[in-house]
Image 1 (tube, rainbow, N blue to C red):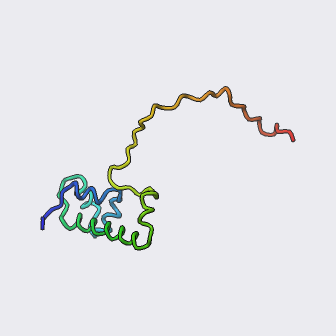
Image 2: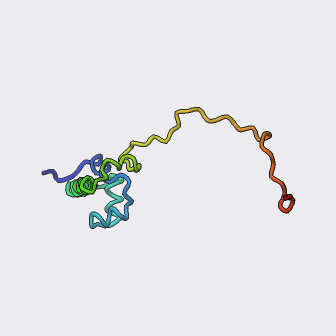
Image 3: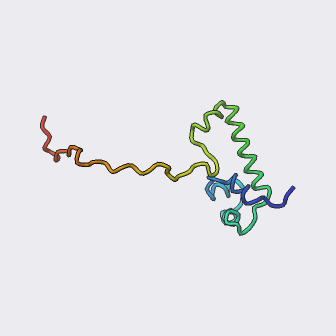
Length: 110
């Protein structure tokens, strides 16, 4: 067994988990999590392993409950899957002159 996990492995399993929640799950302080995430200290092997086992347990529970196939449709993603850069050109500005202005309050007629 290794003494330390790789930073990439730890980041993979810790992606999307806030530092405070991650500290509670791993039973350590937020400063320790910050040191692991920044690279000042290498994360121990058990931290990445515990996160991996918790993820496997959650996916197995989802499979047993019958909604494992629905997870991708629910928008649950991991890692760097989402690309926020738009590949389409920006839309052309709309023609505001074609919009009918609303009447002033109190000027509506029945």
